[in-house]
Image (tube, rainbow, N blue to C red; front, top):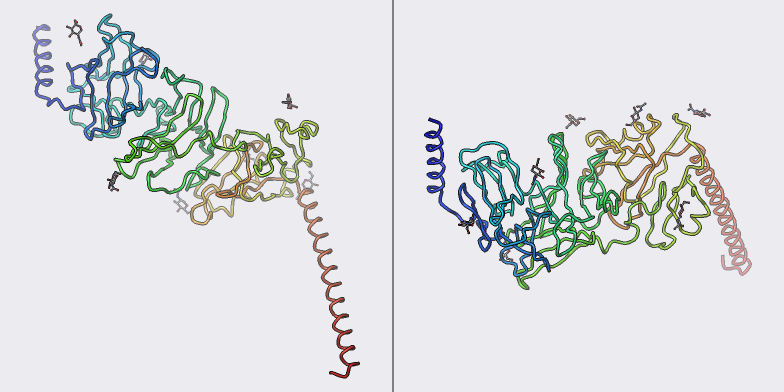
Length: 470
Ligand SMILES: *[C@@H]1O[C@H](CO)[C@@H](O)[C@H](O)[C@H]1NC(C)=O
Ligand SMILES: *[C@@H]1O[C@H](CO)[C@@H](O)[C@H](O)[C@H]1NC(C)=O
Ligand SMILES: *[C@@H]1O[C@H](CO)[C@@H](O)[C@H](O)[C@H]1NC(C)=O
Ligand SMILES: *[C@@H]1O[C@H](CO)[C@@H](O)[C@H](O)[C@H]1NC(C)=O
Ligand SMILES: *[C@@H]1O[C@H](CO)[C@@H](O)[C@H](O)[C@H]1NC(C)=O
Ligand SMILES: *[C@@H]1O[C@H](CO)[C@@H](O)[C@H](O)[C@H]1NC(C)=O
Ligand SMILES: *[C@@H]1O[C@H](CO)[C@@H](O)[C@H](O)[C@H]1NC(C)=O
């Protein structure tokens, strides 16, 4: 009986396999992709097959641009487990797992790990470059069993996400190749940190190298690179389910991608059809020294125009290690001159046009009026600063509060935002004292000016009268 059922099932499967039209972008049950064979997306932009990177002799299963003679690889399946001969083949099983095997040993080299049974599992290389496993004609992305876009390698393609699925805790991030000959994960990652107000970081292992910043409604705070442009659009999404950054291209025939290089540079490339090649139009390798994460330590800001004497303590703060600070070692940062009273006598000093500090330890509400922000910060003793979190609509909505020392701040010529730093009342008084002195001096000088002018006029009139001309 069991044998009979098995026979029926296998008959059904072979029937399905035979009747499914074999399109070049699809792998069906019973079909396999061997060395020398490829899967090509419907519009012929992407191709999936076997390749060897650089000087490597190992074989990898990957996706590349079909029209690019360099075969620039955007995704690799078996990053850590190269195939040593040319007997690799990819197939899909009844559970909907993609399985990469070596025919010579029958070992599984890589698998996509799905665990449901589908009636008609197929793998399709979509026009976006996303390799998906789905049930027959079910094209709803929410029902995809598995997709390569959930497992980015070193390349960020249009429609991919960098961020986190807060429900499943799945993280989408880029990781560099070890070298141009080895696609195994290297030291560098480009990832989102969902703590506090979410930010993007370039890291080397656990160490932050570069903080792109947090999203202010239009762009990452303090970035000048991200501007509306004819090639791509971009978007940041943050809700209860997911937090991610994504981009899309305006014209499918003008591909654009971001890559983390083996040396840790994040670069954006756009395809130029005329020269049949990629043009790089942004790289973090060109950023100035003030972009080195936390260069100045706490409560200090970096001004590239004053480099190498680039770091300056905020008003009301003083170097923690004055000796080290003198010799341009800023690691210890700055500390308060006067400690906070933690009551309503504290106040805020405004720092204009800066890249807002690291928001790993912050709180945000994009829907409350900015006018309420100062009071919210003042009411909580641990609050060290506040700023507007959404620059759209004239910055009238959105409040961002910091609950830690303020790090990684720089002065900006463009796209800077205002930061309000909490200080003790005495610092405000000192400042108003200075202001008072300035006002008095100005008054005295003006008064003397008026007197002198009056005297000159008087003398002139007298002279004229003497000359009998008036
Ligand atoms: C594996 O190798 C055998 C013998 O060379 C061949 O008959 C078979 O078709 C191969 N299988 C695949 C999936 O390529
Ligand atoms: C599949 O699952 C196994 C065991 O849970 C794990 O070792 C392997 O890394 C997974 N493979 C992929 C591609 O996620
Ligand atoms: C898209 O780009 C191609 C190649 O550069 C160009 O021929 C085509 O006109 C563009 N399409 C649109 C809608 O701009
Ligand atoms: C900078 O100062 C810190 C703390 O005072 C010290 O530990 C470190 O060695 C100094 N770095 C250099 C390069 O002198
Ligand atoms: C705040 O605290 C300081 C010292 O702790 C005190 O001198 C001052 O009067 C207090 N101000 C208010 C408004 O409570
Ligand atoms: C935002 O605030 C307005 C009024 O303050 C309220 O009507 C609206 O429901 C709020 N929206 C969200 C998403 O909380
Ligand atoms: C101040 O803010 C911190 C961090 O959000 C929070 O843990 C603490 O409960 C707040 N304190 C008060 C008095 O609201």
